[in-house]
Length: 219
Ligand code: GRF
Image (tube, rainbow, N blue to C red; front, side, top):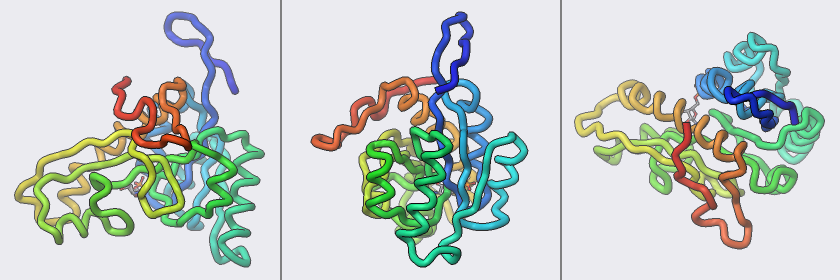
């Protein structure tokens, strides 16, 4: 890992992380603006979509970026193997899914055990999968929220790391909810990375819930 000096002059290690994206990349930007160069070093950004805005954000910060589009491989397994190989070559020790719109195979997850996390715009286990905000609005909930969780082979079913709620009793539109959730996502995802980087967050496969260190606050 790369070394960095903190404010007190102590030398600490930066956790090499990779960020997987498919779209705008505001969560990637939050990581680049907070933990990158401090507790962590973003060593790779991989997109499932060519031309995603997130790729520009990586390039602007000089972070290696590549596209692994499903259509360029025989099947998902082959795509995941190539992706895992590249992330391993880059030295990534934590894989962060930040708006990554693809499912990852068990083989991929097995390459990074207990080290793949995701940010999801609902209070899991409510409203997993696609269009979580639309699902929540259709249900008529009055409390919305964000979850950062470990990734397992299910759809948004892995152990919770951090969650935060926001009350929006009169919410009508997705834009309004998204505007309220964005700042929560941009705070919680770096928080989870910090916990992991400091070794305060550990997933024990034999006893995964709750993950050790889950919910711990840290700045
Ligand atoms: C976020 O809402 C995240 O919770 C979900 O996908 C969205 C990604 O947004 N998984 P961005 O690309 O980080 O702006």
